[in-house]
Image 1 (cartoon, rainbow, N blue to C red):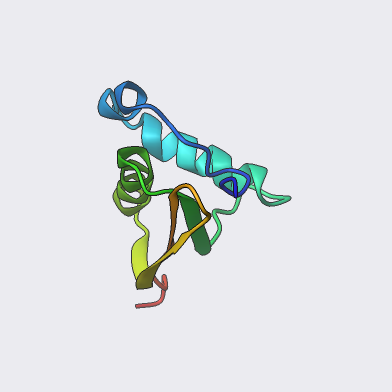
Image 2 (image 1 turned 90 degrees about the vertical axis):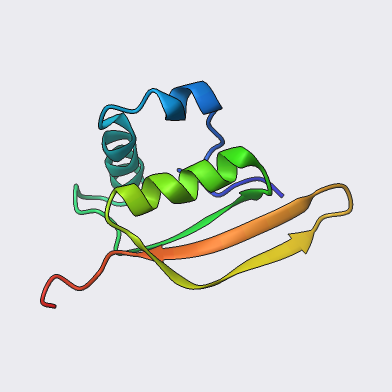
Amino acid sequence: MEPIAGSGDRNAEEIAGDDGASRRRLREENTAMTDDATPLRYRLLTGPDTREFCARVSEALDAGYVLHGAPAITHDGTRSIVAQAVVLPDRDN
């Protein structure tokens, strides 16, 4: 089971050197997953249970997303695969 489009693994050096780049990258991923430049209000991040996956969730939180529901975990026979939903808060609240 591979991560869904737009949620590929990143290495720790790429994430650690963030100067706003993670927010730009997340906006680019959101744009790539839609037909317009509007960020997706809901995203389901999936991938192997690694530090990189946790960094991707952290990037989403840094970009203004909030956790939605509990994380999920399954096993594909060789590795654990995790999922975490994130949402952008309502702009009206």
